[in-house]
Length: 151
Image (cartoon, rainbow, N blue to C red; front, side, top):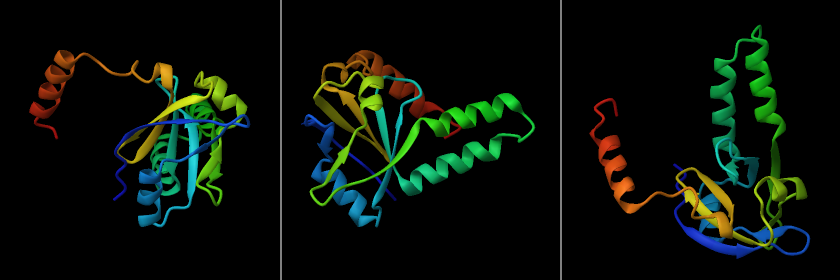
């Protein structure tokens, strides 16, 4: 099972290339994954890297819920797919973040990689604290989630 863990700062170069942190590359290599899919997050202004196997599972789950006769459902699937791009790491462990993705995530040069279990988020470094809550709110919500008997 793929598990990414970490909060790592990096910088893109002038062309938009960035090194995938070594800790994340090791996880991919251990799982035999060599292809990633990048997509803008559906909720936040960050990018998400999916190992290809994880991406395929998510797409299969979404596709299974879309009725081919439901125009709006097909539009959701179409938009989900159009905002995704396959990428591979070069020999140095770098990949290119296309300009349109840099703009979507408001990334200049400084980025933060955050391991999110089976995906990796890429945030503009100055916005990387936005998706977090206060320690008190975090504690209360975690207690609420862990008390949920449906898990």
